[in-house]
Image (tube, rainbow, N blue to C red):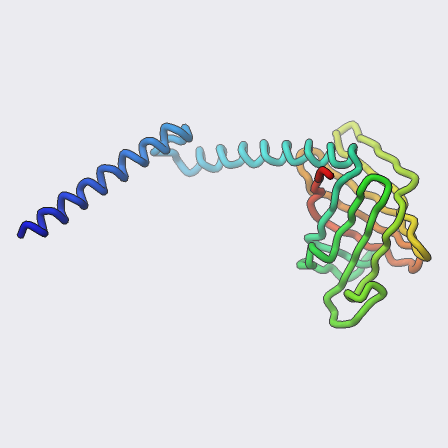
Length: 189
């Protein structure tokens, strides 16, 4: 009987402490306890817009500093080519590090390519830089990567309010162009 009383008291204390903790979280976050679904969606939409605008500012600074990477979330080969919806972002990217750049593409098709990964890698000097900002605030960045034996023209469009970029790679070694869709992520050396 004594054990049952102790268990009941312990359970009541745990429930009371849980309510007090929940109230503390509500006070800290400022989120009302009885928030409606529409209010929650509006709040989440505002937070996402704020996070996207911060990501856009970071991406702009990466372009200005010339230290960034565009990782592939989707890729398309050719003008009306095949869409690859889930490429490996660690082997499919466009990287700029100051005066040097790398475009690495690796199709997971089981065949070895020029780079040993089933694709092509262009690694070399970044030349002919051009940065244009449209009236809407979109950033258009174009440059050439001059590697040994092969080179490519790269254009990156970064749309205002997001770090999502569309990069088009036009290589000199074949006529098909490659379009890479993914986030532009800045970094510091």
